[in-house]
Length: 351
Image 1 (spheres, rainbow, N blue to C red):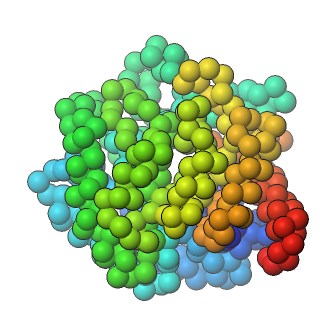
Image 2 (image 1 turned 60 degrees about the horizontal axis):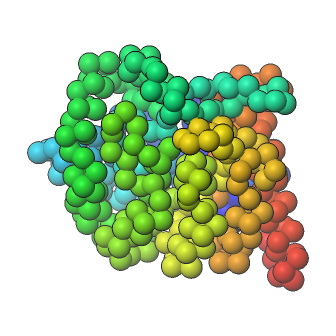
């Protein structure tokens, strides 16, 4: 496994120097964040990013993400031109040795929470979601949350939501299939493994179609085109938000099929129907069995990038919600400890 850390580039208050001091971390997961979706990432810009990371004896293990423009997801008349840009970005990334690219097909916004600083009993705070609370809030109170594209005005967001409602789930599936049938052969040609990120949370939000939400949907994705390059980025916290999703079962099934290209490890605690809070990574802190999850990854010989995902804000740290230094570093150390115990406990003494 390539133990990695998500870094947000120059805008990240957590420096590569600090990240390099976390024991056992060898990789960085990042992207080109200062360009809008649908534009070409130049080789020069990618090369500069790779070199900065290499200067700290780290490697760029995955790109998260190459954004998929709304024009592609909506199936707009000009989507082919945006797909061509996406292909060019794959070519440019491959020329610098990038082997894993994460993306998502979530309409209008990325991950979504109703509270970014919900207190926990230990005095820390973390991201929280409640469908009941969401139902009480008007749209204008939601568009400034981190999951939204800040380039959109309120009126544009409203228009976008209406377009997706009209499109529906099957329309979104059709557009995903159209996209994958054009980009997967290119990714395969350049030796890049794609990983689609699950919807977060994995159910309909604000009437928007959400399609990457369970084992059945993940199977449908990988069956669109059979290729090592058409794989998954499994986020335990995203899928795990739905209590019906068995994360160990999902990981075991797709890892054995060679479709697991990227893993995000996060723990969450359920409080009832469509209500959960993110916790420390430790199994007993939440509802997911992180030991069982790591055990499956080891037993199925998963060798791709893996990173601690959203953490709590602890020790009075301020910063990007879910992406503080301290709790994610603790989470990484816990994951690494589980890995070492599993490896040595099985008698396979390799790193």
